[in-house]
Structures are given as structure tokens and as C-alpha cells.
Length: 259
Length: 368
View 1: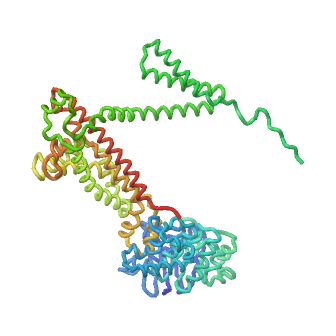
View 2 (view 1 turned 90 degrees about the vertical axis):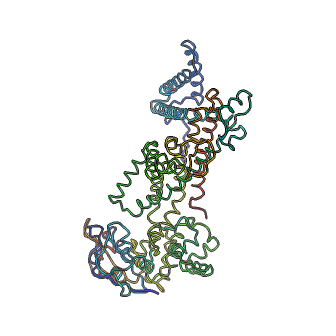
View 3 (view 1 turned 90 degrees about the horizontal axis):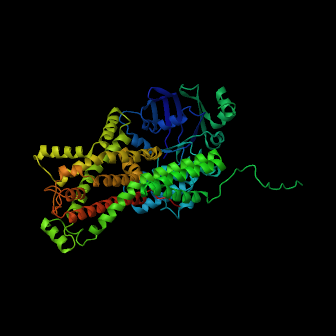
């Protein structure tokens, strides 16, 4: 399953501070969309509004609409927990649960919600999710060992396996490779390419080569200055953004003249 | 090819250095000189040790200042001060443990001391045991049971209240006014004199059950007043250091907040919480004043905390010393008091060891 996301007139606030202003964007189903832009321009903030993780921060709020296949995430009576079970997230730093084994980490979405699952189904889900995250062969002999004993790249893939185990429609990735070495980065990028067959993937990255390699479409965010809100400057096919951008600031950014 | 430079006889990078044995030599001579000086002024061990220490520090620092330079000398002075402060702090502890061991072991190894109560042990019994040189009768079983039961009930009250308060403060309050008030009051509670906690419990139960209500449960309530702030504080610190990333990871999987707290936050912090609770128990098990006014004194075994007076180790020690069973022969009572004191110290020590063990058992496992 995968669903598209339509964002219209979205303003994101921290308290009274307007962090991201007036975003209109459509993220296609079964595609990879990359968000690029300088630090502090609101990419991550915007990404977190897509599964209502933004409001976990005290004082944070949102105006506008985010439609998941036509359902507004911010409509009255929408339970953020339901939203998050359909839109998964992978964070910048790998964060496996330290008290759980590799297997339990993969099953965390099931176990933490106390859903009952026969052992054979659970085993199948663990194998399927770990294979989906290209981690199965590395950990199949030590599923009962703690997840924190893995290397950084393996931990990050474990977190991806954990996210896809709850079979979401969309996967959000907030700089998933920024803490990883080039080899682990390559493994994750390959994985993103496979994931888009089944999921809608949105990735925030500081690495423009990465955006060019993995994404179908790219959105460039920028900020006018400190204290000003971040804005979506340009959103187009990745090839267009990198080869023939429509805006001067996009061209400056992707060619490395600033930022 | 460049020729190798030969090593210089006296390196320009080093300074004068005292031989390794210098401090020991200075120490020995300081001890001898101090002994000689004390012999002139009238010898006592304490003065001798003090004078020897001062002489050693002066000798060590000044010799270093002359040969090794100012920096090394300052280093030695600071080392001496730190070490001296440490020894001064350690002295009372060692003295207490030594005194209690010497006075308590004979009573503790008397047959029946751990297994019997003071029921039927009267002044006549003590007089007889002194006159006939037979072992001292009577024991602490009733007091030990009382201490354990009262502390157990205090823990049963304090842990849920304290842990839930800490969860509210860390997970739900968002640092609002109410939480600041709670934090302030918890800090105030930490400083409440224990006798006040005892008076509170006594007055509270006098109000609802009638004056003079003294049971183990009243004592447990008094102790929990002392214990709750400790549990709140330690649990709060432990919950605070659980990384926010773990909470966000759970939320992002569509897990509800209370489930996240129950299944991710608390398991991650459980080792710290459990050892904090154990230390809180160790802190209240030796409380005397609140028990005097809430549990009363008993010489018989009472395992029902809801009815009747109850003995405890601290009050047992107090009564044995202040009102010996046999006023004409207080020695058996004194022996029992020291033995009970030793038992109490052993209990506290075991609880501290238990806290370490608990922390290790519950700590998140690592390994590949």
C-alpha cells in the first residue's frame, strides 16, 4: 500500500514563532521525494508535520491541510496515533530500543501496542521486515542479541525494518545517512530505491548527490534570514532542480555557491 | 644521509627530580621527629599522628619546591590536602564500624538472639544471667520483624506515589506552574525533620481512629512521608535521562503515550529507579524518632501492622539503652543494644549492595 500526500497552505509554528510558511506540495505515491536546503530552513520541521510528530514538542502547532489520499491529518477528531501508524518515520540518529533484542525491536510496533500475534506470524514478519531492510543475512543468527550491539549502519537499517514492520503507507526519513559511513549510506540508498516500489518515501538530506541519486522529485527549501520563516522555493523533477532550476537561489544552492 | 644526533647527557627538557624513595624517607623521619617532640611535651597518639602528618607535608612540599620547582610543589601540597581531607572524612566511619563491631559481635552471636523476642525476659532473668555467667537471654526477632514489615509497608505506599509523581513531572507536566510547585514542595519535604513526619502520622491517625493509635501502619505512613520525596527525586532524574529519541521512535510507530511510558521509558530507566528505591529504603530503615511516636514499644512478636504496638530495631536500641531491662545490671541490655545496632548496619549495607545488584540486573543488556 502506498498513499499520496497533498499539502496546502501549511504554516508551522513553534509557539508564536512561524517556522515554515505557506507550503503547497504534492508527494506522489510510490515515489521518492527529497527535501534539500540549508540548515534551519525548516525541512525537518516540515517533515515532522507530515505524521504529526511536530506536536510532540511543547508549544508546536500547525495551520493548514495535509491530505493523505484525501483524508486531512489535521481535521477535528483525527487521532495522531492512527496517523503515525500509517506514516512511519526514520530518524537522523539510529535509535533502537536499548532494552529490546533485535527481534523485539523489529516487532516493537506490534508488541508495544500489545497486539497478539502467533509466533509463526511474528517470525515471518521479522524475516520479511529485516529482508526488506537488507539486514536479514547479517543478523539472522543473532536475533535475540540486543539491537544496540549492531554497528551504526546496521542499527539504522534495523530502525527502517522496525518502521516497515507496521506496514505504513508512507515512510519519512530525516537525514537517515548523516551519521553513517559511505558504505552504510550506499546500503541505505539501495534500500530506498527498493522501498519506493511499495511505499511513498520522503527523505530529508544535506547531501545533494544523495538527493540526485535516490529521488524522483526534489523540493528546495530556503530561509531569508535568522528569525524569518522557511519557505518552499522550488519543487520539481530532480533532474530539473539540479540541471535547470527555475529559481536563482536554487541554482546557487545546488551549484554550491552558497549554503 | 643525515647523521644521527647523539643523545645529550643532561636533557634540556627535564628538570631536577627527587629520587622515588624521597616521600617514604620523609615520612619515616617525620614519624620519628614527631615522636621525639611529643616525648618532650607529653606523649599521646592523636597528637603524634597529627604532628607527623604536618611534618611530612611540610618536608615533602619544601623539598620538592627546592629541587623540582614550584609546579611540582603545588601539586604535592594539593595532593596532601585532598588525601588529608579524605582521611578525616573516613575516620568517623571507620571508628563507628569498629566500635559497633567490637561491642555488637558478642551479642549477635549469642544463641537465640536472632530467633527470640524479649517476651518474658525480665530484670530477674538478666540478673540471673549476670550472676551465673550464663549467656544473655532475649533477642531482636520481634524488632527485626517490625522493622522489615514497617519498611515494607512504607515502600508499598511510597513507590507508587513517588513513581507516578515523577512520571507526571517528567512526561506530562511540560514544566507548567503546577509542576514547579510540586518540585518545590518535594524539595521542602526532603528537608522535613523525621520527628515532624512522625508527629504528622500520629496526629493524622489520632484524628481518624482516635487518640493514641499506635500501630505499625501508622509508622509506615510516617516513614513514607520521608521516603516519597527521595523516590520522586531519584525516579525523576532517571526518567529525565531516558533519551527523547526513544520516545519519538515509539510515537512514530503509532504507540500511545502511556504505552510508550510503560514499555519503553520505564524499562529503560528501571535499573536507576530500582536502585533509587533501594537506597530510599536504606535511608528510612534506621529512622528512630518517627517510630517512637507512631509504633510504640513492644517486647513481643507482632506481625500485624494494623493492630497493636510494634517493635523495631532503632526503638529497640533506644529502649535497651535508656531503660535497661534490669536497672541494677544494665550490661545485658547494653549488649543487646549494640548487637541490634550491628544488625541494623548490616541490613543497611546489604540494602546498598542490593541496590548495586538490582542496577546491574536491570541494566540494558549490551553485547553482540
